[in-house]
Length: 121
Image (cartoon, rainbow, N blue to C red; front, side):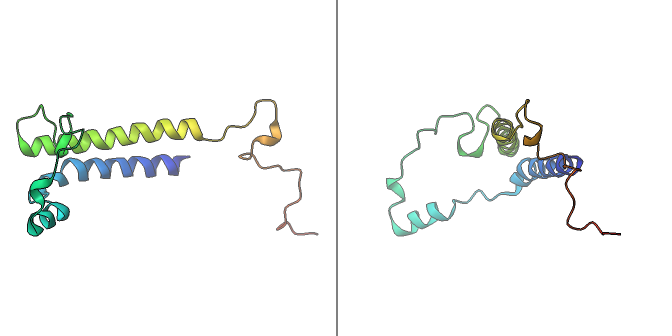
């Protein structure tokens, strides 16, 4: 259990650093799809998505005036939202043993059964 918590904690810290600090160095140039659409002459046919007016649209926090801070904050909020949703999903889906069935608990080894690697004397 400690290994899992350590792994999740380190992963979360790294994700927050990449989203919060790494986003400061992201290119402001259009992505590959937008650039190709412009090169091929159909970039003007693009339409805004249904989420274009959302608070985190275009990878920015719309209520923050500074572009770098806005992008970093949007990344951190995104990481925290994914972490929260994943945590809820894991809690809902994880296997739980039945309270009245001790055999259903696979996490506790059954010491009464002989082990295959036990040596006979």
